[in-house]
Length: 255
Image 1 (cartoon, rainbow, N blue to C red):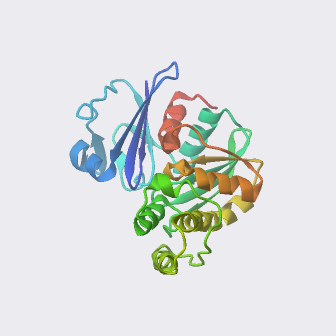
Image 2: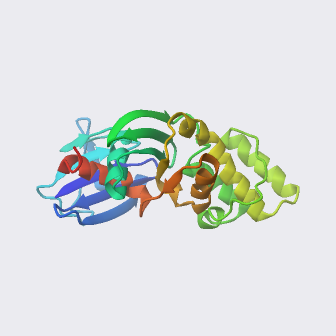
């Protein structure tokens, strides 16, 4: 068995992969995970898999994610986020040539993959304006669910602010002006695209594999395809791509 941990800023994703490729997927709130199932000693984190109800005896473990630089998981091989997501995306889609776009809770990443190899990548962890946290905040302003927010891309309101904090104030101003919820939601989704477009343009290809929790936004996937002309592929359960990539790495599924 191979076990992959993606230590995200908002959630921890765990993937268990048998040698036949079958998967078990689990997700926990990050704070709950660290408080209840992890104990740090000697600079390393010991994960209580038994308390999680997971039998990983004999498993080869790899870890990645937002917390990888501050949390050294005992018994695990730590690999870079971009590599984990690239391996997971290639495994889940069967593609060898694509642009990877991963939008997580608090950072965004893009990578160019050719013949199954990482050619170049860009990351942005300095601003939350193109992440899940930004979408959560904007959905709260509009008093809609993330699912509802992710349905709209037509007739977008123009949102000029490039800052997550100022963006909320600007959105509130548009609400006061009387714009409809669908137009406001579309404007939020287009504002995300405008922030990630420079990365996609620099690492362009004919196919974009969209991963991370934000990839559940159907509207954003549609916008990316429409504005870039690329085919957009969203793996099933895209938020687990990094954890699955860790399993792929340990299993040497992709060489």
